[in-house]
Image 1: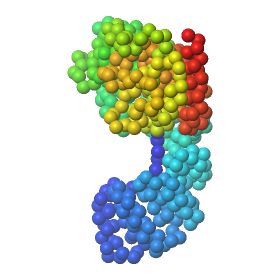
Image 2: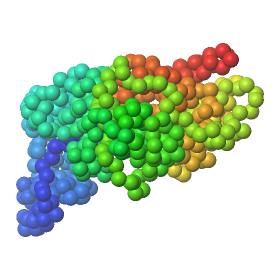
Image 3: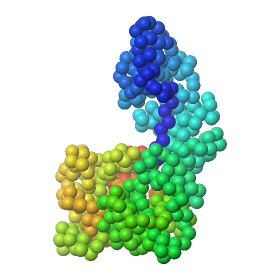
Image 4: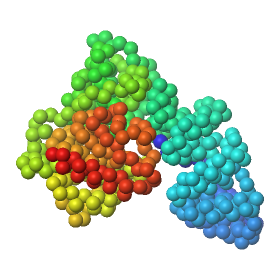
Length: 482
């Protein structure tokens, strides 16, 4: 969802401008304006460390220049030092450069330092200088969504769209502000703006005339439903396949390799292909995450019958001996970290030390379904806890489902495993950060998407301690009730 709109002058041919700036400084090495231009050109070419040295040299000549403090702050922040950038932006303001751009980038620096309230204050100050400054409007709205104030974000974004009706980032953020409030009708429409974002380019289909709009599909028609985001997204929205099949025709699914065997068991799905495989001719197509909007799904009409995904019987049986020992202990599956490439992974994933309390859970048998790359410190098994590691043996999501089938409780952060357990109708306890993904809505302990899911939410950013304490208490109650 993230949108970060920095503000600093750019040049379409930065390398050419850099060469000119170097030559100008060579001829006049003590001219502040020329040094400042050289710093800007270096920044635009990504040479942040050299830009910092040039701007610092410039300040020796013009120590009271707010503009140079601002430019230096941008390079310092780009080099990975937001705290240093905060100091420089504030000096720029002190020295009279009280511009919306300075306040906007100060807000970004505060955000990166972990001070969301100060960030919002800076974005408001930027809009106070210029209510029509779109970068500040987008960043302020994003900060409000992260601060779980989506109604206020919605108002800010509607103001941005009055100024720039075709602003892709404003529509994209507005979709999240609406959906997290349960305003699905308009939210799904705004969500379609994702196709205008560069990140969607690899999944964008080139023939809009083939897009299915929800009509009846005579039996001779073949419709392609294709995954275009993560594993969890595909699992969540494959629930609509039976509704599509009910319109007639043949449902063909294109998905990630890890999901292919699992999706072959989904009702209404006739054929499954892995991304990159040649697919026999289809007549119409629809992205999986567009189905909710196409089918007019509201908060009250989400198809929530489970299970709608289940592994094959042989897969379930294959994992029985590994998971069932006849002792009667409560079987709990654990996933504490997600994909490190996820934009919000730093907030949604736990660290291994968060799990130390599970070592005191008597009568509980813990299984790790944790996947990850070798050397990833986030996935190291917590010390002092008896956890049976199954993750390395899981070949795909059907294998994962085969293990989940034997669990009494699946405990996971917001990952594809949470969607999988929910889609299977298994008890799943999901740990959600303070600022949730739109699909988990706000303030609820249950999910309209998955009736067997319980949501454990942070009360404040980073507050996993209280969440884990609640989980442990409820886990002991669950064990004792057996």
